[in-house]
Length: 226
Image (cartoon, rainbow, N blue to C red; front, side, top):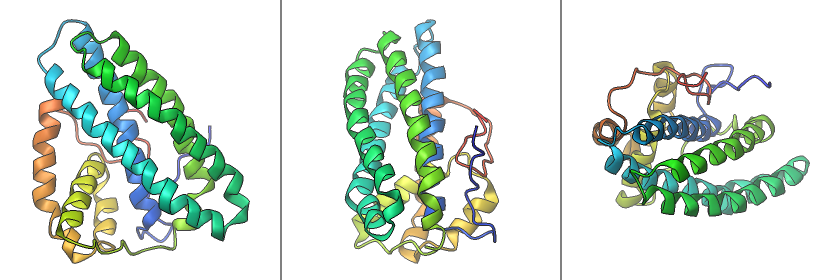
């Protein structure tokens, strides 16, 4: 198995690779949490079924938005700049089109909770697809992003709020030194919104998953599955 890349550069700085791999960490982390929560629901513990259903909606939107951003921005830009990765990018784009129907299946399955069998099947299949997909991105693309050490300023307040919510989700379970380095590359309009956004996310996390040990991941592999 290929060793997972570090979230930070060798010199301890954060980059756009850090930010994107933190999202990868979040997808892996949450698929594991969904699996464990659905197993509890299937066993009869339905207390969090409504919150888990709502969390799936957020997961679907986040993953779909992540893929749209790659298809419309990151991938075309890299393809123009680096001929060597064009075949990889074509495969990754095909993966995105394979994942969309899985997310739609998940919408139908999670709507049936507390019946959990189909939701579990979707989560397991999605985990298998994403494990390979994310590992390819990390191994073949992200070295080209290590030099990009500034996150672009959001165009308006609404976009800044959206990014703050996204970063708050991605920060869950990441090592403090990674978050400190990331803080240095974020624009003030985004950084100033993070405390409130992280507080709101913590409440959402508690509703869906309950009490969880604090993670301190330094790679895109969550401590919960490392």
